[in-house]
Image 1 (spheres, rainbow, N blue to C red):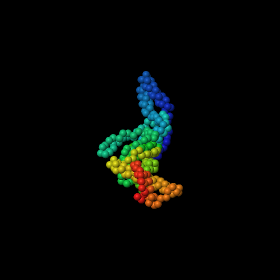
Image 2 (cartoon, helix red, strand yellow):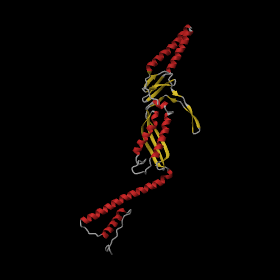
Image 3 (cartoon, rainbow, N blue to C red):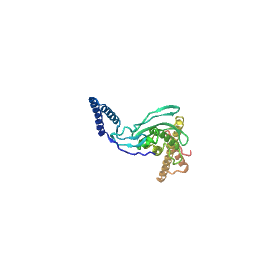
Image 4 (spheres, rainbow, N blue to C red):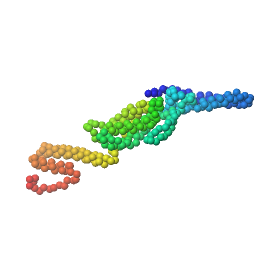
Length: 309
């Protein structure tokens, strides 16, 4: 893989002063040659002016977190990362030529890729993808990826169109992640997309970093932004979740009611409030469970006789 080699460029302000001297010198030669009708001075002045114009093409400026890759006649020389106003030989390439690409049967021209690139953090929002989870259930998933270029030479030379490369690899990683874990029902202790959001984000970041390492890209963060069942099974899965929630609530309610009944019987026995045989205990337990577990308010029934009449 290509490795970034940092170099420095010449200060642009000093070279700007020299270029103006060359330009005015050429103009002076032309004027002098015209006054003395000397062709040699005129041609020398014209050459000097053209040289000054050529030298003016070598100026460039870099803002913070920007870099320029220096390529001379196809030979990679290094990367300038310092911010400021600089001058380098105008023979250094300013862009990499475009080409024709055939995608989905459509041939289009891809424009030139500049040698100057941004090193700032960027966001890529992966649109909603419809994939199957580990259990084969169709789900919708989307993610946002925060990335930045850390090796400008790798980004420019080791992959073709590094921004497009990041996009394709990010979508591929999200698809692979979604198919590797169940949505919300897995084996005991198994990581799920819904229940282990933080762990899943770490796995996504690690996989993205492995895929994009050759492009000189560092993944700073990766998070799921959308996770849901596909519309065709969303209603059925919603009913299942509702049923599971009702069952869980019932289990908690019954467990609490049994505890309260046990506590009531224990305190009545310890305080000698009343002595109950097994049949009266069974009747009391039944009544208490009806009151505690019923969905509607209990209606009292006045018994004017005894339990056995």
